[in-house]
Image 1 (tube, helix red, strand yellow):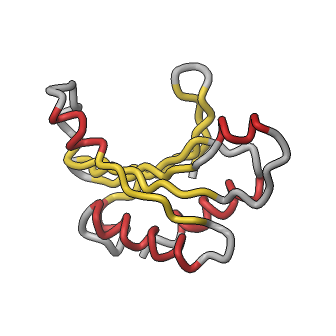
Image 2 (tube, rainbow, N blue to C red):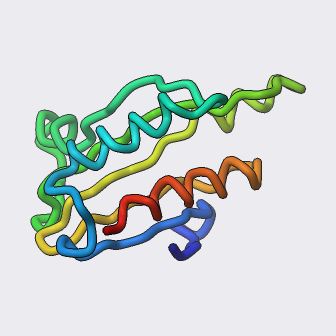
Length: 128
C-alpha cells in the first residue's frame, strides 16, 4: 500500500495487485468481499455501490483503454458529529479498478487515522 498525491492536492492510499496475487476474479467479487467486511464491522455503515465505468461509458466519456471495470463501494464510519464540516469529508469510498493485468484499489485519505488503518487492513486482506 502506498500513499500518493493525486492532482497535486488529494492524498490517496493505493495498491495494485497482479491478477494472480488476489483470490478474486472480478471487480464484482472484490466489491462483494469488501461489502461483507463493511457489513460485519461494528461501526461502518454500508451505503451503496457506484459503477463508475458504466456511468462514464453511458456519458460517452473518456475511458483509459486498459481499464476493464471500475466501481466504488460507498460507506461511512461516522462515530461522531462534532461539527458541520465533518459532512464534507463523509462518506468514504474504496475504488476498485480492473486493468488488463491487475486490480488497482484505492481510497482518499480520511481525517481519522483509525479509519485509514481499517481500510488499509480490509484491502490488504484481499491478497491470497
